[in-house]
Amino acid sequence: MWKDIWTVAQKELRSCFTDKLILMQVLLLPFAIVFGYAMLMSGVAESTVSEAEVKEDSAYVCQVPEELKEVFDKTGYQSVGKEEIAGLKERIKAKEIDVLVVFPEDFLQGGTDLKNLSNVEVWYNSEKTSSSVAYSRTTALLSELQPKIFTVNADESVHYDFGSENAPMRKMLAMVFPMMVFMAVYTVCMNLAAESVSGDKERGFLNTMLITPVKRSAIAAGKSLYVFTAAVIASVSAYAGMAVSLPQFAKALKMEDSVSYGVGDYLQLFGITITAMFVLTAIALVISTLAKDVKQATTISPIILMVFVVGSMFTMNENAEAVIQSLGIGNDLIPAWNSMQVMQQILQMESHAADVLITCGVNIAVTLFLVWLVGFFFKREKIING
Image (cartoon, rainbow, N blue to C red; front, side):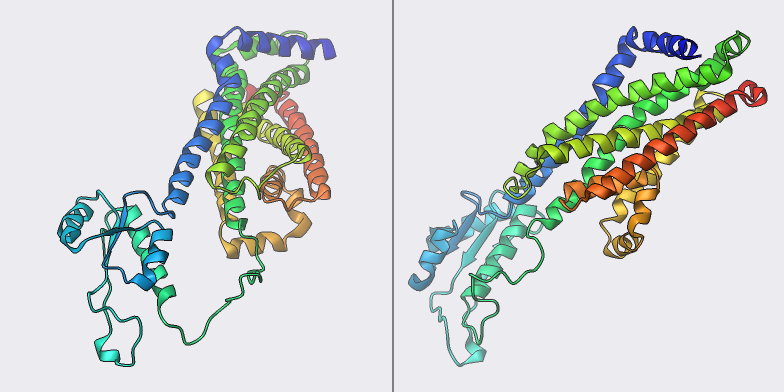
């Protein structure tokens, strides 16, 4: 029987590796999807982070009082004369620069007459993102310079926030990367499973195989072995894209010092990725076995992926996250979903070895059951012939 299984798998693998288009799809597409999307996100993140900094030749201040001049110079604002105000306003209107701060000539930093307070004008353009950010930064700076009745959290040596400074960024990584990996690999495996089973069924070739002396369970196992082999290759490709992209993504967010993954973390991510893809690939095989043709298989299979994509987004909602956490070890027992959760924990540096082991074990057990189920359906001639 093992010889028959290998013969079927070998036939499928030969057709895969001799077809350059399919080979590129398996080898390069997962890497390209993960790496390309990560670089796109890195570019967006880098531009967002850089907007929080004062850009050269973008922020100006006029008639700044001597006692405040040093503060504005240190934060990157360029001092200009009163005669330049009109021109700078036009440049802000044209979205060429971000902000202009104009102090009155008779500026008073303090005083008891609340009816005659000095008014500081801050000109900006809300239609330009960096200008809005510069306005918010400027008003925050001016608020800090105002006379205070009392201070709040003034001791800089004390860290008053009990949360991690980079926790939101790590949560972003945890939401983005598992979703990209699942999408990239499952898209490839879904199509291969559909072509391998539903495609042969549609072309009539599967019926020819069924009347041969080879056991149907061996045919099912051979086709499963082929798709699982492709899933491993695609998973390695996607994993490589993730491993290369993670440092770049962290660098774009300026958090590379606080987000440093070790060899153990990468090995755990690799194991979780492979076992998760086994489960999803096995599901795609079951769908392909039950489907009448390729079109039906490729119409139903993406629904499975969407369930996990939506599930990954739930973790960004605090209420949903509380419900997920209340399940405890129950999360590790739900196939594929457990992989999403554990991958997110690893990327957030909150993983536990027990969760990783349970998740891998559950995924392998469910995969074996689903492969048996594929063989069971192969034995039902009515379903195969549709």
